[in-house]
Image (cartoon, rainbow, N blue to C red; front, side):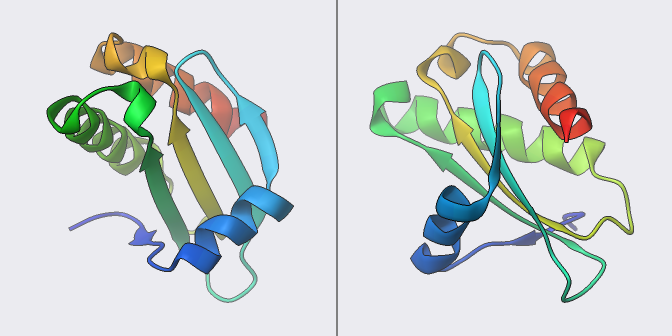
Length: 107
């Protein structure tokens, strides 16, 4: 089971892009806002077609989801949107996890 709830609606993604605090790293961008509703993390992952074909995009999405699962602490109350950059396609899992950890610690 995931350690976070997923964002599902397009409006949730758009709201995070507009109002969220942006943290930029080499392989990804992270938009964050506090979530006063419940002490749970709500996260969404976006991988654009510039990253690669469907196979590459899905691999990047799975790697980011796995890194999120490893790094998220129970009891955090925030909403996250992780946007993969094209450089994420060539990055290994360690690099993605390191960038994600750095972005989560920055805010």
